[in-house]
Length: 288
Length: 186
Image 1 (cartoon, chains in turn red, purple):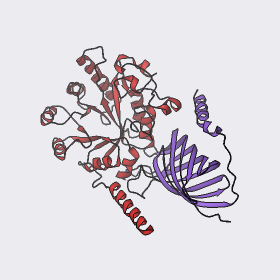
Image 2 (cartoon, one colour):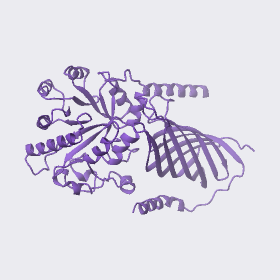
Image 3 (tube, one colour):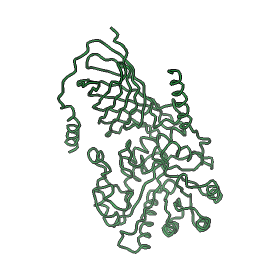
């Protein structure tokens, strides 16, 4: 009886291991370059294990300076006084002690907003919203600046100005910052808004733009008239055929929403140039 | 202001220790055993086999730990160790409760695909003060859990700047274990 029980345990362990041990087939991007590990909001979004607010200076610095990620993806919004601020949601109330939207308030007021993601963030941390420039200035001092992907959150519902004027101000502030730090090689701008992309292209054609919209043949044809660096897709929502067409147009591929071991392995096997992950250490283990 | 918050949180977490109950009659002999545990804390899900030594109400344990959350190929790592001390003070039938001081250390090579010339490993220290209960399934076998609060200290290598950087923070501990106590050694 005991022998049979042990046998069951061994077989069960073997099956569990086989299920967990799916391996990567290739560890380079389709272009032959190493896959860039990009921390989603820095160290990723809040989980049981991670209580550092995304887009906070603590999270971004830890991803780059501590975990040696190749870059970070940050969520950028435009304040009422045209300063680029880092925050994910449209409403400040969802994860800070402020109310309203980023677009309704000035940068100085926003810098006083404290993250309140969970009880630990409340009691043990005093992380506040930051200006994008504060982070860029610090990263520009590194020997090799990391990749910074700006996810342009063009929430214009809260802005007092007309949509096109708001998007124009947003594009101007972004282009000015990139020019100021001569960061065309290491700051990338991600957006699904074609008007915003057009404005950026007009202001500085050297800016690397990653399109974040859903794939369609007509969309792809329209994008060919812009200077586009790459296309970002949600992992698991893109086919091999779509990836082949994007690559045939000479664009790079970025994959996001990659957290679990299976998602990471699947993402690596699709050979993108960039992976935005919420689990930097595990992706590093996989790519070692 | 921060120190007041830390003290307040610490006092809040210590209240279970104020429970008054009939103390267990201490056992004078040494006993040793083995424990298989899984724990969830800042470093994620970890699992390990520890050796244990107990005399009376005092129990100490030590052993290796594998970080399951960050392991790609099982056995490859990251590895670590866990050490701890427990004070067993209340017994009610088959139930027993204890206070636990737990220390976990994990280490791994920093990610360095360009093979930049740096030496050293990343280290993560975790300290927790916990409260636990265990249930005696049979004379040698116990099943239990521990719930605690504490903090972590990460010492990470910035390989591109060749600097070691430290980060601190708050951590919770949930630990589940199966303990097999062997016969007293003397």
